[in-house]
Length: 144
Image (cartoon, rainbow, N blue to C red):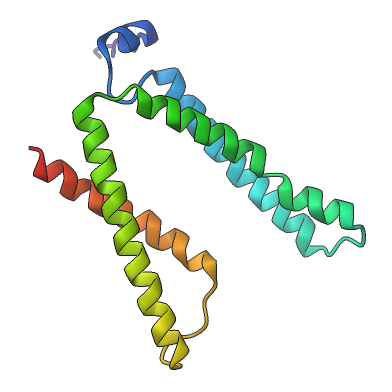
């Protein structure tokens, strides 16, 4: 059985691996899990309808520090991308914003005339999660 060589974080940084270091990717993944766990924990606390306003506010704010840290790690990773990857990311993000805006406005219009059930802002997240990878694939295809 052949052994897979270990990824050297320093070599990745010096050679300009796409997106930065392995440590950065693992940090982002860990922060994502932490943020998700904090969202679940805060939702469970809020669902129990605590009587104290302070507990409600603290529970609602629990995931915010993890999201700020995740945002910072992603910004730093993006800054290490080369120009082509930055251009592809920007193109995918721009297309995602336009597509999601169009979908949300269209849904809102059909909701207004009672063809679709009422939905809150929660609906935008799954739409973004589906739309961004599709837009990124189009951007990759364009630059091949």
